[in-house]
View 1 (cartoon, one colour):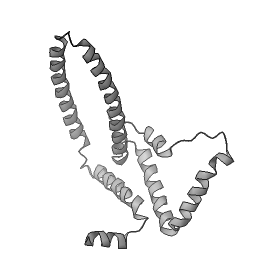
View 2: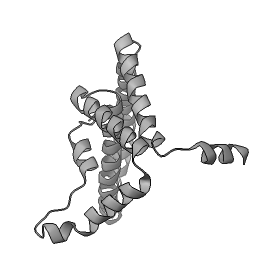
View 3: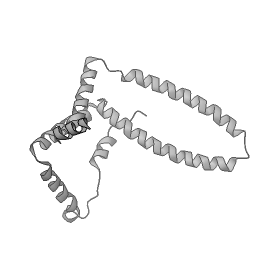
Amino acid sequence: FLIYLIVVWNFEIYVIPLMPLFLLIYNYCLIRSGKDNRISSMQELEESLLAYEEDEEDKTDKENERKSLLDKLTALQEVGVAVQNGLDEVASFYERVKNTFNWTVNFLSLMMVFVLTALTIILYFIPLRYILLVWGIHKFTKKLRNPLLIDNNEVLDFLSRVHSDM
């Protein structure tokens, strides 16, 4: 309870973009100093995935012997494909965020540093009430200003430019 009160009393809104900015700078300093361990962790991940695929091949060989459950297996495979596609999307999104913070694509990570720095400065000097007013006016009058506008998400557009580990 006491920690909650201290955080609420001392919290400022400009700290929110400042936290990922510090994480980006920390990872950049690790890379520059040579203490980066991304390559060894990627090799360990590849080895564990290969071992998992071999186990799955053994299991599928036993299932192929049972031809009487063919209908159940096809339904199960359809559900499995749908689940696998969903998990692939989630894993890809996570890997793109991770690669952004690990400076895998230097230009995009540097652009994120500049945007977070500008956002921190804006949130420090301009009250949140005014920022929300401008955002709300922009949001509700967007279709009035340009009726043929196609709505998009800039954060997802940014992350689509960062590659995942696959």
